[in-house]
Amino acid sequence: MDEVILDLGWPSYQEVTVDRWKGIQHTRELDYIAEEVPISLIYNGIPHVVMLATPTNLEEFALGFSITEGIIKSPQELLSARVYNRSNGIEVQLKIPEERFRCMSDKGKNLTGRTGCGLCGASTLKQAIRKPGEVTGDLSVKSTDLHNAFAELNNYQNLNKITGAVHAAAWVVSGQGIIDIREDVGRHNALDKLIGCLLRTEKDLSKGFVIVTSRASFEMVQKTAWVGINLLAAISAPTGLAIRLAQELNLTLIGFARGDQHVVYTHPHRLTHNNNVL
Image 1: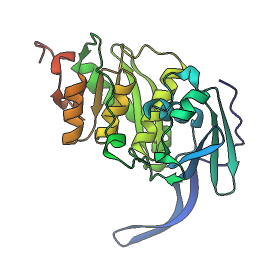
Image 2: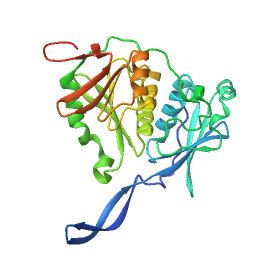
Image 3: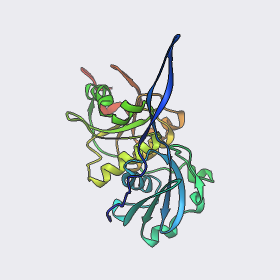
Image 4: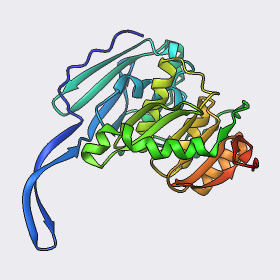
């Protein structure tokens, strides 16, 4: 992949003077607000979709989005990615093989996705409910490793420490803890950025699992399974469609992972506890 060109013109957060009240006590002080920027993904010169996202790790975002949306089949098919700042947003100009470009549906052209939209541009049910193949592998995760990862997650969320307004997706390996983390105002964007990071660095995706600071929606399961990751754990609840898809795809889905508690919704054999395997 060619080198990305990025003029650092869009910060990930802004300083804003606010009126803060606590009871009847009033102060004026600086606050730090997460940025939300239109990101236009342009394939082979043709605009495909505009996403609202945090303007960081955009090469990884483009790669993760391109893979999990089925636009390309491997990281090597993203031939180049160039990032250009414009006055009203950011353009990411991507080059993919002509064969892949010809296969792209018209579903996303000139459409705008809301922050972290997971079904942006889908115009039919078939386009929306895309099903990857079943995940495979003999991953085994200790529940203590799962909880330790969530406990240390906040220490890795640098942007969220400042703004309190972004989601995170993290890659965890049992016995090693959090290896990689990406943040974004949109939960889907954070996951796409993480997946792009993992693919660029050629991580073995059968050896770890993903944790997210959001609910586990259908699209989060879809994106995780698309690249063959075995286990997805969320701090909040899954949806019914997410559970059904995870069950079908042999993916272990965990929700409400908080403190020393969690709920396993599908394929519990991958998670081990102190004295038993559920």
